[in-house]
Structures are given as C-alpha cells and as structure tokens.
Length: 585
Image (cartoon, rainbow, N blue to C red; front, side, top):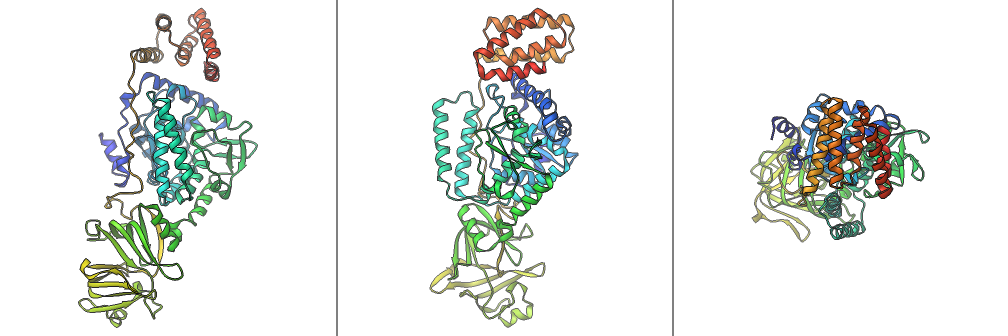
C-alpha cells in the first residue's frame, strides 16, 4: 500500500476501511483504455451542450483525462486540494456505506470497467460511472455541499434485514453481468434470486427511501426547467445510451418533489421511464433536510427503537442525558401504552458520549449485551440525569449505600450504588452491585449477572445506524464487505492478440509519429485484423481516427469505413456506436 493510500485510509472510520481495496492499475488492458477513451470523448462532446456546466472543467477538477483510465490515488491527490478525496472499492457496495464515504468527503470508486459489449450502459458500478459520473460535478460547490450533506444524513439511515438480502442478490447480478465467463444459467438463477428478494420486501426502511432520493437526484437527476433540463446525475453523465435517450420521448420529465421521489421505486437494470427535474441544488438540500426530519436519528422514541430492532444490525440509541448505546437491539419492554420502558441489546455493546466511547464501557466489557430502563422516576418531574448531588442523596443514591429506585413505568431497581457518572453536567450512568431489576414478575436483571450499569435518561432522543464511536467499535455491522467477489477475467490467445493490436494503435497515436510510420503501422494492423478475422468495431474506429488525423491512405480510409458499415449491418446493436464514433472522427 502506497503512502498516499495510507493517508486516505487514516481519514475514514475503521468500519469503512475493509471496503477499500488496491486499484491495481496494471490489470487494465488496452481494450479497457479504449473503452474509457471512447465513452469519455463521446460524453465530453455531448455533455458540452446537454450537461450542467462544463464537463471538461469537471474532469480537470477531479484530475482526470479523456485519454486514459484515472489512477484513483492521483484523483485523490487532486481532489484533496478541494476538500475531497477518492478511494478504490470492489464493485457494488451498500447504499448506506456509499453515503458514509461521502459523509467523510470521499468518493468510492469501483476499479472495474465495463466490457466492450456493455460500452453504452452497464448496471454494474464501474470506474466510468463512479469517477466520470460523480467526480466532475464536484466542480460546482453547491453540488459538493449537497453530496456531503446527503452523505451525513444517509449514513444514519436504518436498514432492514430484507435490505441486506436484496443487496447481496443485486451485487451478484451486477458481478455476473460483467463476467465474460458467466453462463446464461448463472445469470438467470441470480436474476431469479434477486426478483425473489425484491418481492419478499414487505417494508420501506429508511435506507430504501433515502436510496430512492439518491437515485432520482445524484444518480439520475436533471436540473433546470422541464423544457430545457440539463444532466447532472452520475448515471446519466456516465451512460452514452441514457444520456441521449433520457431527453427524448417516451421518457417523462417530472417536476422534482420530495414526496414524488420517495414514492417512486427504481430498477437499476433497466432504462428509467421518468426523470425528475429540480430547480437548483438548494432545492435538493432543502429536500434531503426535510426528509431527515422524519428519520429516526432526529425523531427518536419507541418507533425509532423498533426500527433498530427490525434492522438486526448495529445501531445507536441516544438517551436524553447524552449517553449513546451502540449494539444490536433485540428486545423492547413496552408499557400498556406501547411505549418502550426498557431496552436490550444482544452481543457486543458499547457506551459513548458525544461519539467517544466511555473508558471501560466498550465491547470487551459489554460483550454479551446490555439492558437499561428508560423514563422518569416515580413521583418526580425532574429527570434523573438532571438531579443534583443533594437530590440524589434524598433518593439514597450515594456511593457505597443500598438504594431502591422505582420508575414511573413500574421498573424497579435495587442494589448497592457502585458509582455515579456525570458527563457534561448530566448523569449518564449509575452502577449497582448485587442488583436486581424487575417489572412486575419479569426479571430484567439478576444479581448474579454482575454489575448493573444503568443508563440514565428520561427518553430516547435519537436512533441511528452504526456505532457512535466507529473507530473503537469493531463488530458486526449491517453491512460488511461481501463474500461475493468480483471476477477477474482470464484471456484467451485471441483476446491477448486483440489487446496487442489496441496497444499498437495507442502507441501510434501518442508517439507523434511521422506520416510514413502511421501508414506502415496501419497497414500492418489491418493485415493482422483480416488474417485473424477480428470483428471489432472500436479497433477500426481508432484506426480510422489515426488515418484521418494524419490525412493518410485515403484508399484505406474508404476500406475501413466499408468494413465498419458491414459490421453495422451484421450487428444492428453496434450501428449507433459506430455512427457516433464516426462523427468524432
């Protein structure tokens, strides 16, 4: 790992570091480089008119060139000058994890690149989409502010167990679609499994809803007026197919509204039937903040705790005292009104204040779970967290003395006071030895279980995904790097021959050759293309570009155009790609 990669790793929390990989630039083939160059040249030309702002300025802002696949470390160094960074990841990662990277000012860049036969569009995340789609828009400070704010909000979204199952199924489909060795049977089975997981979803989690907002803005957003919108969504900026078709019938343009976007699901494997047009980035910032007002991290309460239980993943509940409990919430004890009066976690749990783990209150100590009451003590309107030392003495809460507490909910705590811990003037914990905690006949904590570290707080003010102190909390989260790894292709002898031909074209183009060298090189290339019967349209487009640029071999130019015409007739799906290539030539 290089020095710059290490410095980037130091900028992100521990739970995100496992998602970062080495880009391994050496694995890109000359065909990969040609695919990048074709797409970027096409998009640069088209987006100069239809994109929001200057696309080429955006590429330069992010340290990218039309001529070659970007080095993520070089991108990171360039973006660092503007308060951003970039890291390489392995393919499709969960949306909440993606948001978390952006919350820390980092763009996650998938290192893989689409296959030549998916050059117009791929549902799989690749370096064209992640870098040439997302990064150029950062040249607009308002967009960058929106993206970072969205990341901070989205990273707190609670997922569901169904979200995790859909993610794994979707990741497998995206990998197989870009794997040359994948069989039709494998693809069909993976797609059936994805369809089953999608059909099994019975709830719209916070992750589901905020992912829709992200999809219809950051990924597939239009900006301006309904009659003359500009493209700013990364999915549009990186797709030659949809960047052109999205402004034509039958794609419907809909005025952006938060309510409409949240109600509209999407399918990543198909072109979008409608797109939402926002007025400006301020409207998007207002929308994401308004949605955040409905999320558990701002709402708190029993409903938010129930979402944490349903997620089956690490979440954090914040008491009104400021104490943060991070773990997998499994049980809520409710009163007759359906309000939570006691919460329980199972497995590693940590306690923190202001996102900093309290000494001695980490997962090593709370390795088997944690439980504590919520609410006011009986016969008082003063929250326990706000009581003075004198008020504590009146209640018998003195270190070294026996105490009996009864909460308004009926929860009873009896034990020897071991400590009272204040943070920022608020009581956050009271420890008891020989303690029993009961609600009616239900035993919530038994004396033989050890010290009862009682969380203090009248109510739960916030619940959010992940741990409060992510640097110190190392255990199972909602998502971890998938065991389904992106396939690394192996190349046949014929494919390696084609790679060599592409490389020769690239070297000719970049070496400022003489006319004689161009003519000799092109004749040699075409001879071998004919000898091995290589039906490659992009290779011929690049050769024709060389000839036209150097005004060389007019008769051969006619021959290459004729071959491209024959390929377009034989393979109609190539016709538009060939025509667009010829326009740039």
